[in-house]
Length: 323
Image (cartoon, rainbow, N blue to C red):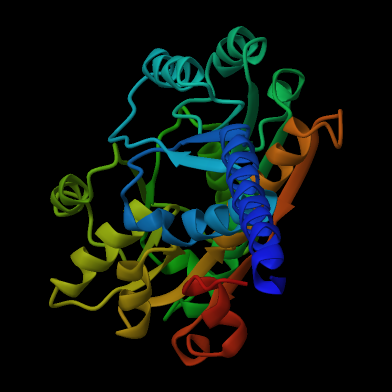
């Protein structure tokens, strides 16, 4: 008799447990559906240059509980093309978009049109004239990177700097970030007694850059102001019988390889992991209404040489880890 009285109670307890589990699953499903969505639009999204950056973004997305989508892209030529990509992200329900501008020229007008429809965060760009149209900017100090490269050029010159033939590979002049790097480099170099013999502006294709380098006066020092330029400089220098000094900035594994092999003497590395982490974290914070004012962050950069490549603090920024 006692067992017969217990049986209905056990059934009721089991049903209650099942209903509780179902309720929790429905609640979890609802929470997932309500997660905020952030889309990321960067040049050549599969490029090795973005590995650390994307790892930082993924970690921040996990910490902030947002859905992160890295939009597949190739070379983005115009702002109108970039605007169309943002429009598609908005149509897909994006609550915020992180953008690396393909051009600073006319960017304020483009961002003004888009900012009424979504929250925009800029990365790798510190043009403050666009601040009224974005919720934040996370970028290295590009002028300071240029100055650091100039100082390293002087350190590794094999003869007086004024006697050195110095060639420069740089990215698009349409980007204010690249203009700032170039200005910082040239002004600092002039202050150290040197000057550039020639400047090659590339369009993003390292193979084409290598071909163009063969047409220029052979430099004593080859300077690269971005990752694409550094990869091209390293490949070009490694194919030459006459040795040359290569100095520059980069974050890809190929850039690190050229440093480790001694082809690149000095590598200035922006902390891309933190740029990725902070951009997602700051945008999510704004979307969740934890702040209301635009926020500007400047990420650090550091100079790495072959003998410091495997120092623990440098390994942390060169090879992404879950922090």
